[in-house]
Image (tube, rainbow, N blue to C red; front, side):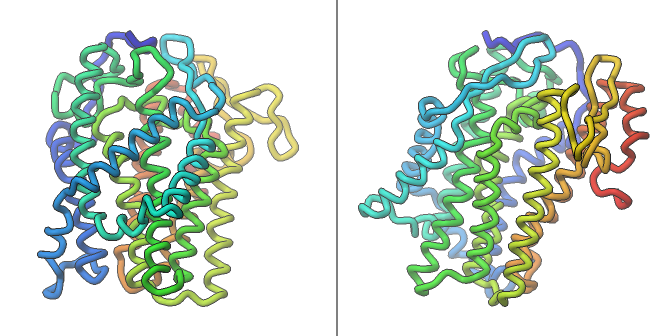
Length: 426
């Protein structure tokens, strides 16, 4: 049995609209992914269906193929093998509620580099044609969605079998959505953590691979890569490279620390991220207008500033957590508030500006990627709009969790740091 197993002691309030909401999300999220594919490829890049939309072409494109199935299963197996065997250090996760720490293997940089070498080599040797992403994207959506359903059923069974979930409601559909296991590991109690792996490997690396395959395809078709598409590929690849350069930071996120691992995270990690976060790249490939040099420079600066804010804010938190008493931020000893549980809440640096100023950096990057697409359609702006809603919702959930955990100490902290994300705005 996993080292994190313990019997649930409470019946948490249902989130996401409860049982009806969880059913709607389980069934509806794949529909959203399909619709975006229809809109960007078969509806002229518009959100509203038009009389010229190629519905037949869309329906034909989402029929699964054996080639798409083989490639995706091979991709997932490759990333799993790299997670298990690629070189990397082993670090402790955050302290578990019942004490102790789980260990995680941090080999994202090696996995990313090895994947890149293998794909470039396979393309050079003629074993892999990057244009297959362009040709069979709809089939990949279907294959990946079906895989995630099967995988989520396994996760539901695994959590029930090992009695590992922190919060179980007894509502099967809701528990399928939220998950019945918190840290499912293969083997149980081993080092290979399924939640960490899915969060950090197949979908994130595939996001970059899809972007670059589209750039390759555009070059094959036109002899050049548009400035707009180059900007998107640059920004999103830089974001993932920074992620792997600071990979242990994921262990302090809400997903890893607090969420169970069910359909919600599995679909988000394996399908939603690679198949919707690449929407700007798809739009740039088909419809984006030319970007003047001065606009390109501004967008690069916007992206770099956003990444700088995001990384600096998170580094302040990580530095403080490693050494609360010795941490120095902006030339001064870090200040904090101590809770009745002994936890220390940082109130120095950017963490004195707002409770989640790192989200500001996230949003600057997101908007820079979409602005490269021009203003011909709302479709490529889905990501920053959705991401803003997601971050506000996540901040609200985090606030509720901390209020329950820290009680009066959290109230005192909120008075000290009143702004949630953007000072003087929210």
